[in-house]
Image (cartoon, rainbow, N blue to C red; front, side, top):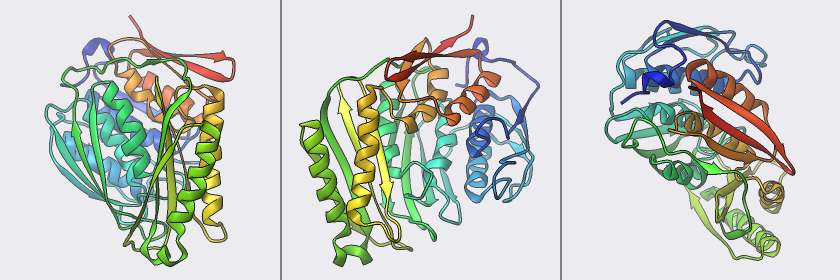
Length: 360
C-alpha cells in the first residue's frame, strides 16, 4: 500500500543522510533504509557509525538491509561489515517470506526493527525466520519484542506474532525466531494516545537460561528473586515463567513487563560472568521500577522503537517516556527527513511527553 503522497517530505529524488548524526549508531541505517523501502524514495548514507570503535556496518546491519532489499527489490551497495557508505534505491514493495541469518550473535531484534517498519506497507501477511542473537547486550531481547512491542503495535492495527524457537546468546548466537507479520488494513496506522500511565494491573516475565546452567538453577533463581521483588513493590502478583533450552553458548536473562490500564512497560537484564542470577533479576526489576516511578506511558527502550509507527499513524499521537534519549532524537531526525511530520517535546513533571503531529 505504501505511504500516501501527502505524508512524504519529498515524492522523488534522493535523501542524503549523515549517519554519524546524534547517537550515530546502526539505528539510523535501519530506519533510513526501512523508510526508503516503504516510501519508494532512494537514500544515501555516509559516515556510518563513524564514531564507534568498529565503524561501518556490522553483520546484523547487513542482514537487516539485505532483508529490506529483498522486500522491495532494491539495488544497493555491496553489503559487507565495515562499509561506511551505503546507497539504497528501492523498487516496489512486495510481500514475500524471508529467511535471514546474521551469521553471528548479531541481534535478531535489531534486524526485525527495520523489517517491521517496512512491513506497514505490505499488502498481505508474511513470515520471517531470523537466526542470530535472541538475547545479547545493547539490543531488544526477543521476548521484549514479543510481549511489549507487539501488543503496542496491535493497538495501532498492526499485528506481529513472535515465537522464540531457540535461544541465541553471545558470543556464538545461533538463536532462531519465527515472526508472522499481518500488516494494517489501511495505509496508515491508528494513532497512539497515551500521555501518561497509572497503577499496575498485572506483571509478567520470562526467566531463561541455557540448559547447561540448569544444575545451578539459574532460571529458577532469577525467577524467584524477580517475582518476590516485583510483587512486594507493585502489590500485584508477578507471574514469571522459567525456561531452559539448548544453545550454542551458555547464557541467561530475564524480561519483565508491567501492564497498566493504559500501556505496557518492560525491562530486561542479561547474565554474565561474575554476576549472580539474583543480581540479574534485581537489575531488571530496578530498571522497571524507574520507569514505573516516572508515570511514563512507555519505557525508555520503547521510546525510540515506537517513533516510526507514530509517524506513520493517521493522526496526532502522544506518548511519554522517563527521559529523552539520544536514540530517540536521532530517530526523530531521520523520520522528519522522510515524512511530513513534526515531533514536539514537553517536560511533564516526572517524565517527558512526546507528541507526533502530521504537517499540513
